[in-house]
Length: 447
Image (cartoon, rainbow, N blue to C red):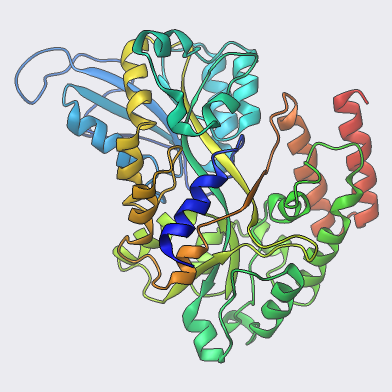
């Protein structure tokens, strides 16, 4: 497939995405982008050019030290606006929503800017009036939403815009080319069913003990099972009957029992991050979001890793054509409690602009604005895997949401997480888990 056609397919697929899946790990931290001398809160400082008031914006991020998705835009903004300093409030992905919720409940001016980790939390913040509506800002600036190809409209809640599309992600399959070469096995293709993937994972499993190489790796998120159950677009993770997830849990448990993937309990107890598994070449393949492309590029650039890796389209159900995937959107919004609303809007505009899209593309990050230029930039980035098949992997034909735009999705996700863990550690049978999902979700939804 020619590059131009591939990029056109990706662009044509559009930005029909309304949720977020993101990576996890790291410790809570608070740092400053421009320099490390900023005290907590809003302060008056001396600028590089002389005395005067230096404006300070605070932004929330997660896992900022392991991904360039935030820092690259923050650095570009402060370089263009030397009189503005950005205070970064960084939290691990797993603790982000909880930490942000506690902060906002105090109704303090920090943070000013909020990167929204998932759509459910955005709806909750909107219902609590913790997010500043952006519509008046957009009207004043004659802001053009068409650059987001419909994604911005899908972020509107009750007719109000609380966030703009910052970045987009969807699931692909990462693989270790060196491990495949050593085994004399062909690389994963861009048209592979899940059954073919399971067989390939078994073939690529070798060794014992600490030297064992697993054929595949499933992170502990329930999304690494339920995503494939909604991949065909026939269901969502908010449903009255969860029997549709049964074959996917059967497959996940079997992979675990057969030793093709690391068992859930070990990963959970040891708090093993998926990036370390892949970077340490402990797994031949790994389903993960496109955000991990930037992580691997960054890792190679820093000489943290040296092996050759590739990317393929995510496998698909046997009755579904290649190109179906599951994905997410990261919005960026403004806290309702900010004491710098105009400056915050200026930052949000920049962070969700075409200029920022091209900056992030150089880091291998897919953004809310997908231009042919930005996609070509990602595909031609240093350390992006060579080969037309790797570029083709960036295209998709159908995009399902990992989490639907539902006001109660966070409550439901908690149930999904709890039942997922009980199934994977075999405290529940799969049938018992499905029964509990049906009962608890029906209670939440009032069905």
